[in-house]
Length: 291
Image 1 (cartoon, helix red, strand yellow):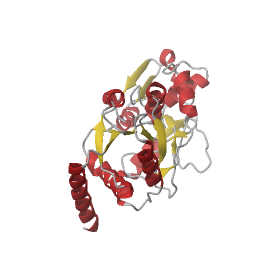
Image 2 (cartoon, rainbow, N blue to C red):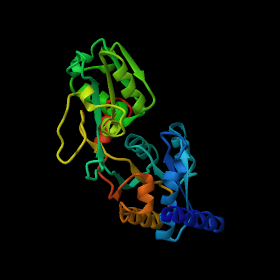
Image 3 (spheres, rainbow, N blue to C red):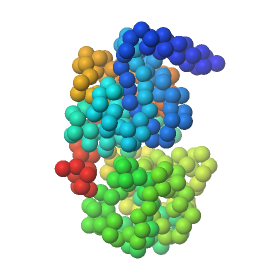
Image 4 (cartoon, rainbow, N blue to C red):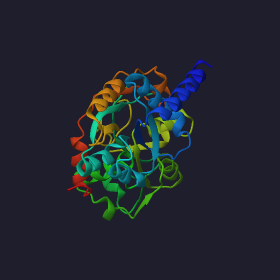
């Protein structure tokens, strides 16, 4: 009840403040559509209003809407995946001002993630090379953790995934990739780190039925992973955004605590100073998506 009252109060403040001032717009990549979007992100606008004294709104953006939103200047800040951030930085000069800090079910907070390459435990596939003449299932071509990281890992092992696999399929969501791999013999898939463990936590699978390929060990990283780690999603400011409000937003985000309502509703632990995204740029260059 207390949280509901807080949400209602913040909503009233948001709409009353927005009626007075034009304010700033935060575009957010809505990777799962608009269902639940405002439940998750509206409180970030309220939090920033309270911290900066300025008006904020949040706007859901599809993958196909991100570029035009930045190019037209209809948004002032952008929260998107790390590979899209790098592409937009190169093209439009946007700048990371904070990096997302995620909660985990293991009691540690992480600001990086990786890709997981896997198959059924009963599969005859035991290495990356065994993908030859097998079906490989990824999320989307634009998914960093659900495709691009794996593609780079195969390249680093001198394997041309597109030429080696019998079929390359895209299932659109991480959950669908897992379901397809488990339903089909000798099929290989890739998802971002944490997907498998969270599906097990929610009763959708048992990790004993999964075989991880090319598994890597990373200190203090609690999830299985098959690739190097890359920085989590950044909050970025556009080149045209006022530098004073940019600094205020950056400072406010980094002061957000895990038990703040904005963090809890977003399902995150808060924000940290922007991490180094240079390895994301290298990845995109390696797979031919960036010059």
